[in-house]
Length: 244
Image 1 (tube, helix red, strand yellow):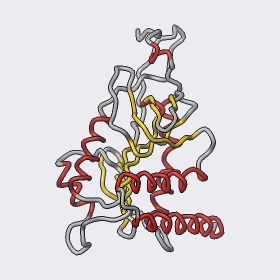
Image 2: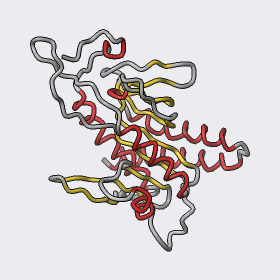
Image 3: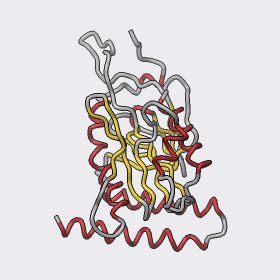
Image 4: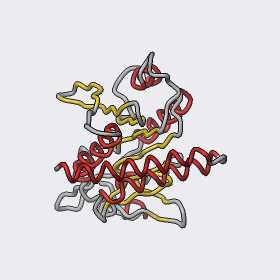
């Protein structure tokens, strides 16, 4: 176990060093894109071949579409995306996580991320189970998990935490963004048990333990999200599958 952890930790340290070097890039858009690549490159070796990573738009079969997502983690077995030269179009049923990458997390960027997450959370999901008459059956699937990964924060660490700031922005009820990682600050995730939820702090030993915890959370969680989706029919997006 120690060897495995050490190898992943070495990769994390190298990736974050590369991201830090990008601070000298003057074009903010290019800097952001390069840092998105850093995070994708951290995740890609840890995922099986049927789990993909991309950038693009999440869509629903009723023609809703999201804003552009920095990183989309999707399952090719559920529904195939349409991959273009740079970006992709991803059916919501196949998307397991959406990750927004921030160079510096501030209140404005956090509110944007929250609003984007709320919009996606309202997308309808087609059932992936059918009866013997080929009729879709009611199904409780786990929605995709919106997450935020930031290389830095404008909070100085002496006052409110990232989670306290997010709780002020989102108001009451359960949070829509359920996973946060800020390099050097911490990793938080929302956990529910018997209908009651609370923020948890992931603690991982060693340098950049918060990043290790963030990666571990994704790897621990995506299989059960994918399993809950079953096998929705691609024909829904072609308009040739009946609903009743």
